[in-house]
Image 1 (cartoon, one colour):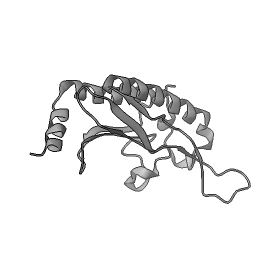
Image 2 (cartoon, rainbow, N blue to C red; image 1 turned 90 degrees about the vertical axis):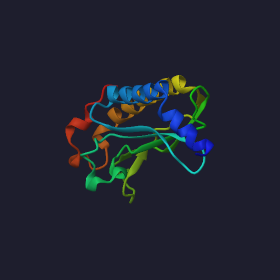
Image 3 (cartoon, rainbow, N blue to C red; image 1 turned 90 degrees about the horizontal axis):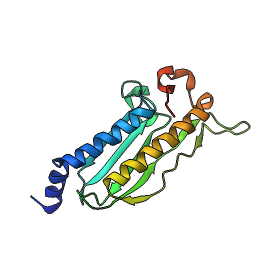
Image 4 (cartoon, rainbow, N blue to C red; image 1 turned 180 degrees about the horizontal axis):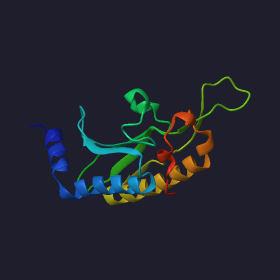
Length: 162
């Protein structure tokens, strides 16, 4: 077993890491009770990383079963994950798809839901993500009448606690 494979196994089997992953999921569900989130420590060619993929629409509701069809499809990645070290968390993809701006020929517009890159331990990362979930909840509520293809969206996905 390589050192990176051993680290991955250690992370997956450490109760404090599992508790952090569960807390991140619970914090998201507190804001988006019907939303989608997948939080896990992923294997890669190099060192393991923390993967957070989330969206407005639950797993069963995305069009054609394609996660990227969610108007709030967001993915974040945490580098240098360790049991007691710092995690460098950053956004890979984020934004809320909205109807195109008047007078343009765009297919849609996008409202930024930026996450500021952080370097914190797992507890600090939990807190940072909790604040981020509240922030994007407010952004969705502010723009809920303008979400792209709103007519195809089940109203339960707009039940947001922000």
